[in-house]
Image (tube, rainbow, N blue to C red):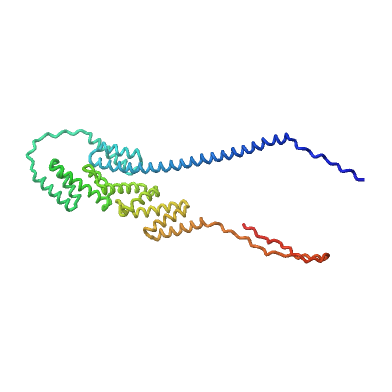
Length: 362
């Protein structure tokens, strides 16, 4: 005799449990929303921070470039003041340059020279006994004036300046206005000649600065002086900051490709060598793709074998870095067919296909 099956009563859901679970669900969703909001706020703060840092870096770089240009200009003016005997002014200019850049080339030496000359100038010298001057003979001045005119006509700017200074030392009052005008012309053209033809950039800048004291320089002369100053500033970063050297000479060589300094290197050649030097630096930093770009840019100016070799090597290393890892495709196994016969029922045999096995890729 079988015992009757005992049916356990189904427990009824307590409505109080649903009321307790509902606030928990709301609290969980609120936490998720709060977490998402915090992530968005953190992302916004980080984005603003990195953007600010990038802008600050660009502004500091621009300020540094401006300081270099100002220091270079003050250095050239200090040389002009030193040669003109204004030792106190030259001393202040060199001190200003050293305050901007303590390692500025030549500033410390020129400051020492200015201090020495200034101290000697402060030493009192006995006044000479006045003597009665005879009636001046102007025949010498007139001949020197004619010599200056002939030198200007022959474009002998340096010779004209020598005769002008001799005339001014002999008689400062002799046709002062005309002599000053000729002095301006000789200084202006001599400065341009020193910058463009002689490779004496500092001397040319000094000549133009002296000419500017007699009359304003024309636009062409001012542009030559700007390019010369920028060349000097760019050369001061040679082998120290290749990107800055490339940026400076990249602006100079399209306008004045043959501009050079006392080294004899033109702006174009300086630009090419800077590209190669920067490429070598990038190779040392294992940045082969960037180095390849620098070498290829240098090859546009001169197809030298050593640079071509460097470019080829950098291209190979860049290709090896960029090539993805080889992926081995799985080898499919042909499907197997199993025929099952049903002897009792006489049904048609059926085919069961087993899916192919695959070899997993590493």
